[in-house]
Length: 480
Image: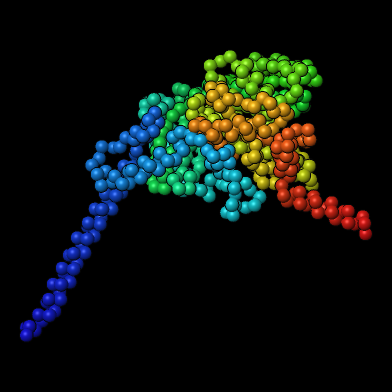
């Protein structure tokens, strides 16, 4: 029989051993957690060599002996994603579009249930945690990156230098971010003629820096505009060109004109522009005896450029733009690697949008709201690409007449090649509404495509519905 108090003593010893064991377990768990945290931090510093996709340089750290599985998983995620190089797609419908954002707004195709019906853009604050983290990481990579990416030894990038960004998510892999900066936050910047693009990747793990590169803002953009008649529309186009392109100093305008009607007026408008601004970098290619073909116009315009691999912008005369688009075109079009297919915001018929109000001037109508227009995600006419990539892909199908289809077929060629297609809504291009004629003599696909475009760009579902029911009510009242 145990002495009095022995049971109590034994119980206390047992409790002390249990507490001591728990202390050791907690300490072991703390060390494991610390190790895993350090592994993830090191993974975030992975540098990817774009010249050799499979070459990934890791920090010299023994902790990766236990983190190989994590590393190989993240490496596999990055290699499976399409951020390093393009790959053939099943069809043009498989292009994974980007979402664009700037300092204040996020421009997206699908607004979802989280936004008000009248808006097609989100405020940055709605995604502040995610995008702020990405912007912070981009600044760290720019300010701590290789010397060749620095503006000067003393210059440090700030949020004021941020122009715009884009992101897209591959559901089973992760999210890719492209951010563009231009040094402007200091008056002592020695060289403001460069854009700096940072690529980041979040492989459903900590955000990972992929690369930093720069784009020279002095690279000339060659506008190629097909035209037949439409003198008044061309006058508006030149107003935009004068205000937003000529001050840039690195643009060239090629107009490919069909027929003789209004040709002298078009040339006169260009001469007047040159006289007022001193702008001389333009040419007019005349195709007097040719039936109008947009694809043929752009093909001939591209062939006329006698410079080494020019950066071309295929543009229609009814497009309004801002100076930001020039930065977007240069930043996302890389010879031999990527072409840029911006998704234009198409304005609705102003007589429907402003039915009960005075119609504002054209530039004041360029407001991105669902009642004003829609993202023209079914159109592929506006694009930035280098001549070398255009030739490699085989150019346009020159058998197509009129407008339409030729741009879709070219886009399809790119999506089925190894060239990356950068496609995103942009806040810098606006398609101006105009009456649209669809010719029944066109090929069936081309004619039906024209009708669909006409139906979608007339007005919002709400305004068209109100118009329909109002007309229906008027007709019913006449019969009663």
